[in-house]
Length: 248
Image (tube, helix red, strand yellow):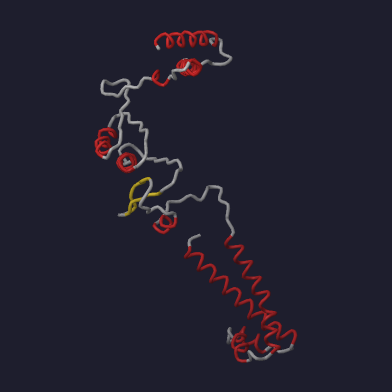
């Protein structure tokens, strides 16, 4: 419920409280003091008769007790109306909706730092958080130019970008390099690529060296537990480990 609707509903609850108070006030006068004139005026020609009488005779102790007694059911009625109207309603179809400008402001989507998500009108949608993001849209709908490329240009930290066509690298690598960042393109199937040798990460000392080689062989040839080929996969791992040891 938005703030505007909340304010309107709370005002409605206040009107209920006033109406119940006036009705109870008139009933107490009629039942306890055998004076039904205020209740009669309220239900016929002057709905505000209880308020007018109480204001005119505020110094009367008996009327103050009547007003205080009438306040109890009035407060109870307003509280019941508020609890009934403001409770969370379950929706079997969900309650997701597109956010409007007030909701975006409350959510902090117009910050100066953080990930860039696009534009709402003339305002840049930007939010600082570590949550996962899912950008959904058809081909050529602006996912790259609206989210990927701006963040590849502006994100201050390190990134790993899956760039199948090389377009993101072509558009952002020069800017990142000019601002002092290191940029690497790893494309094993292309002649235009940086090199990466996993054997460079094998530690030199004997104990760590054996463990690193065995781990690398297990990654290259994973062993399927329970498979009829498990024995051959295990032997293949040993062969690969031996070859790596020989090369090093």
